[in-house]
Each structure stands twice: as C-alpha cells, then as structure tokens.
Length: 101
Length: 101
Length: 139
Length: 139
Ligand SMILES: Nc1ncnc2c1ncn2[C@@H]1O[C@H](COP(=O)(O)OP(=O)(O)O)[C@@H](O)[C@H]1O
Ligand SMILES: Nc1ncnc2c1ncn2[C@@H]1O[C@H](COP(=O)(O)OP(=O)(O)O)[C@@H](O)[C@H]1O
Image 1 (cartoon, rainbow over the protein chains, first blue to last red):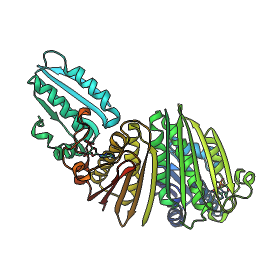
Image 2: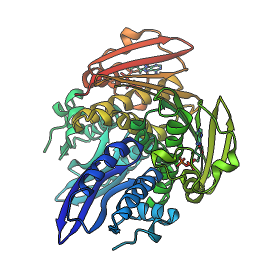
Image 3: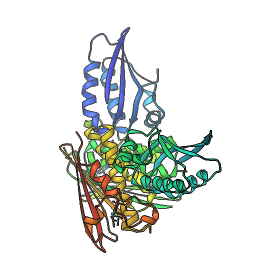
Image 4: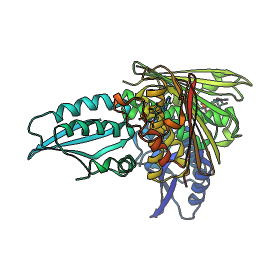
C-alpha cells in the first residue's frame, strides 16, 4: 500500500496504490490523517486507479476520513475506482455521501 | 498448454505456450508425436519463449521426443528458453544433446 | 470433477492477502471470469478479517481454517476460527451492525459476503468459534 | 516473523499448479526475487508430482499435505503423501534413477529439488507414505 499526494488549486489529490485490507489499515489511516491535515485544503479527492483490492475494512476507514473532513466542511470525492472497488462502494452506499468526481 | 507449429524450409518449429507439468504431459506427448510425424521434416525446433513453467516431467517428455527423432536421424534444438526453464535444462544436462539454436 | 482443499494458517492480518489468493487459485480450474474471482476474493477477505479482528480479537493468536470444495463448477468455501464466537447471529448479520465501531469498522462484512456470493450461512458457538459457509456458481 | 500454513488437497495432477502457487503466495511476504520464487515453485512441483505419480501410483486417490513455515526469511516446506513409500531412499535420490521409465520419467525430480533448494530431506515408510522436507533462505 503506497500513498502519493498532489496539491493543486486548493484540492488535495490522494493516490492509493496496492491492496487495502486490515493488514494496512492502521498505517494508512495515520498517513491519510497526516496529509489531510495540511492547511489550505478545500477539497480532497481519493484517486483509486491503482487500488487493486479493497474490502469493508476500507469502507470503515474511508468513512472515518469523511467524518473528520466534514467537521472542517471539506468535501471528499472518489476518482477512477476499478470494477472490484466500484462494486464494494456501491453495496456500501458510500457513493451517496462521497461521489465520483 | 497450447501447441502451435510452423513449417519452413524442412524445419518444423514447435511453439509451446503455458505450463508443462504432469497434468498436461499425456496430451502434449500425443500432440507432439502427431506433428513431428509429418513427412519432409529434417529438423525440429522447440520454441520455449511462451513456456512459463516446466519441471522434470518436461525433461522426460522432451528426452522421449529426442529419442524418437534420433531413430530417424532428425536433429532437435531449443530456442528462447526463459530463465526458469533454462535452469531446469542446465541441471538436467539436456543441452548436451539438444542445443539452443 | 470433485476437488477439495483445506488450508490452515496463523490468524494475522498479513495472511489475508495470502488466504484470498489461495481460494482464487483453487477456482482457476473452473475458468471463472475476473469479476467472479474478485467477488470471491472480497468475500473471503471479509470472513478472514472477521476471524482475526472479532474471533481472536486482534491477539494474533489462533488459527484459521479454510475448507473448499468444487463440484460441477460450484464453489463451497467454509472459513472457521476457534475464537470468541457470536452470541446473536441475527443481529451480527444486520447491515452496519458492528461491535467494534471505535476501530472504524463498517459493519458491512456480512453484507458484502451475502451480496457477492450466492449463499451465506453462519454457525457459531460462543466461546468456541465461528464458521461461515459461502457458495458460488463459477460458470 | 514466524508464520505457518498447512494445505491439504486431492492428489490429482490438475492440482500441481495450485500447490506451487500456494507455496509461492506464502513466500511473498519475504519479498523474494523472481528467481527464488521460481526455484521454489519448481521444487514443490517435483515433490507434488512424486506424491501423485509414485506415492499414489496415478490412482488419483489420496491426499497430499503441504506444511510451510517461514522464520527469519527461511522457508521450510514439508510435502507428504500417505501412499506406497520408498524402500531404498539412497537409490531413489540417485540422479536419473526412476522406477517409472516406461512413462518417460527422467529420474531427476530429487536432483532438481536438491539443486534448487538449500536442503532436502526424505523420510519414508514403505506402505504408509513419504515426507520430503525442503528449506531455502529467501532473502
Ligand atoms: N468470526 C467472528 N467471531 C466473532 N464475532 C464475529 C465474527 N464475525 C463477525 N462477528 C460479529 O459480527 C459483527 C458484524 O460483522 P461484519 O458484518 O463483518 O462487520 P464488521 O466486521 O465491520 O464489524 C461483528 O462486529 C462481530 O461482532
Ligand atoms: N512420494 C514418493 N512415493 C514413493 N516413491 C517415490 C516418491 N518420490 C520418489 N519416489 C521414488 O524415487 C524415484 C526417483 O524420484 P525422482 O528423482 O523424483 O524421479 P522420477 O519422479 O522422475 O522417477 C522414483 O522413481 C520413485 O521410485
């Protein structure tokens, strides 16, 4: 699991690369909270193009980040989910609160 | 395991594609004996570029084909073995009688 | 063809990816689509995570058993732990229900198993463990 | 990290590729090179073929057990059948020795296991089965 970020016009793009399951959850949570805490962020996008696997542990983790951002009124979006992840996101209902950009 | 052949200037090129182990040995042996039996063949080349795996079952099988061809004075060669297969061929000593073209 | 395998491994999160790869490799002979393989990997991952997180409460002590059978292109896979068990299975199966909300669990593990596979059964004895049985037609 | 798994499966040639994939997947956490992974797959394939062809004499009846342990980047893998057994192990280990020459076997299975792994041990009881123990440092 690798995380890279790009900051452009007040938007923080976070690229997730690898497999998101319980084995990486704690480390990933800490990393995301660190990059999302930067000042000047007005919008966050999770780019999922290179996320090759995710299960419901990922849903819980993303929902947690969404809640943190919401207290700061920062909207969160997804971009480029693969078919496997799209299916998990659909079943979870997460798209209702975190739309695809 | 897929076999394709090309016949050019009295040489029969046999392309092996897939994994060569016990599970495909009988079928492959029959197929090879069928194509090598064509008339006008003066030389046979096993092209191994797409052979992704082979163990000692393959050594026995290739040696068997070599012996059959030898009774007809038809020489046999290898072409483009992958590193895994090259290592198996080296340990077996098969290169001494079936050289790389 | 009737084919069987069983796999035992240590209940550590590092083995989740191993476990789902093994079940996927077991299915290859039925020539399933990528979508079906991904459904199975996701469901197996949910069940294995539950053994580690809930069954053994993240202690990393304990074993997980996966038993799989393939008969006429139908996969049946049983995932068992010998941990805590579930007192109220009906409640556990409810969407969004989780006993570990503070760890940001979503309560959707069983929901995903149900919707990604053809059937789901849960057997559990409090104090001695849980078995989840999943089936799916592969072709 | 000390990690363990055990895998049981039906002794049919269609499972050879499954068996070597499982052992390879078990090794991934040690981050081995492609060459090391291929050495392991080849050695495991030899041992599993021997269980099917010699241990169970191609009857497709019987089970194969693979037990693997990873400790400090050293893989130890035990491959067992409950078949015919080997009367003279020393003879069996000889290069080019085979009891099934008519099937075009090369007699190089043990030779390859020995040269592709760091160590090879064979234990066998005629009439009750054979266990091959292979080890290899992965990194
Ligand atoms: N193997 C198990 N052992 C003990 N309890 C379990 C097990 N699997 C599930 N549970 C219980 O069922 C609840 C719901 O499980 P699930 O739908 O997978 O959601 P989550 O894992 O996000 O909590 C869990 O919170 C837990 O209380
Ligand atoms: N699992 C086994 N059960 C019984 N006999 C075995 C087993 N493995 C190996 N042998 C014996 O040892 C011989 C040598 O094995 P090997 O070097 O792998 O060559 P091959 O498989 O080509 O015969 C076999 O021919 C067989 O007689």
